[in-house]
Image (cartoon, rainbow, N blue to C red; front, top):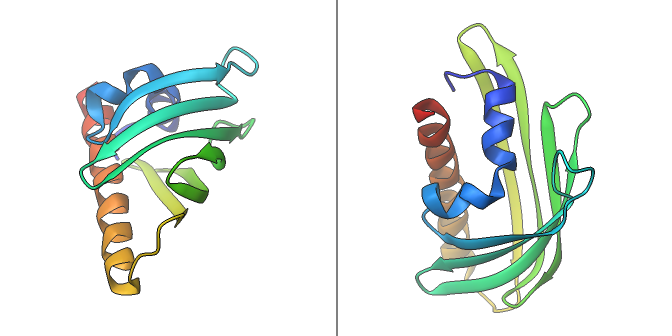
Length: 135
């Protein structure tokens, strides 16, 4: 992305703004402000068409500002979620690696699951890039 790592991490950490730029997150609420600089826990309400959920994530922010990871605390539709953003400065900006694993409480056919995962990952990175580079 054509931005420095700090600018990207600031967008990732600005949960109040997620409804403005993400397609599926409709509301957020910081349930544990952590150290006051970066939230430790956030409740999100998602509406992605057929998939709707309210869930809470616990965040672990790297002290160097180059990564964040999260795990599911609670959810209605999800049994588990683990994800991360890892940033690496490169000459023309920042390389962003996004990982996500979601285990739904509802069974899903493997082929549909893999397609949904690809769409989620692709959409998340495109939305993040658009927000970061616009701002």
